[in-house]
Amino acid sequence: MKILVIPDIHMKSFMFETADKILKGRTDINNVIILGDIVDRGEKSVKAYKVVLKKAVHFAKKHPNAYWIYGNHDLSYLYQECEDCSEHYDAATQTVREYFDKLSAVLNNKISYIKIIDDFIFSHAGLCDLFVESAFNQKLNGQNVDLTALENKINASSPLLMSTQASTIWYRPNDMFLPFTQDKCFQVVGHSPVKKITQWYNMILTDVFTVEESEPGLIIVDTKSKEIELIDKFGKMES
Image (cartoon, rainbow, N blue to C red; front, side, top):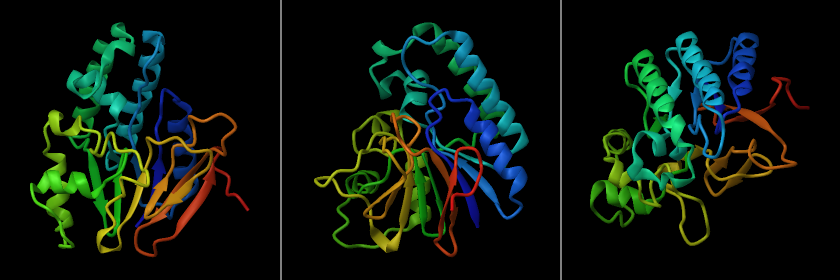
């Protein structure tokens, strides 16, 4: 299965238009996955929130089978337990909640924390062993994990569990906090800004739209062949 991956939106509504352009020109792409953070924090106008959220709902109507993942910024408006909202533009909270209700209705409540397809794990921030152990309430000790059961367990998690730094909406890769590497899984994530799409252990870091002087691009993941195809932000293949 070939999946077009859209990293953190962060109010950049053009990314939905770019994805549409790519999907129209590539009949070999089976689906698309959005890694979250549709909205952002800071002093932005309510109108700016409405613009990007309307485009999100429109994109969902055009692509009803797309996979949508919550980001930490999204959840900070929906569930205040997930982040200190003091930096957020309070007037936008009602708008964000209203449009996420519309988005959920279009998607039949299929927005999730994590999506696992074949050997690929898609989440906003990434999955680590510590969080897997928390979800299963047991030490892994080299044990194999049922990935379907893991996906269901995480997607049913409470906002309190998802507010922890090890969760799939908050985790940041570092050498002291290694990712979940079991069963030769690959991970595709956003959240951690990078200057170019980067591999770290089994993780593909894709959030290249929030760093100045970065090399912005999208990727197409083939979950069967495990090939990663890089596309620039205008939908033109890079040589």
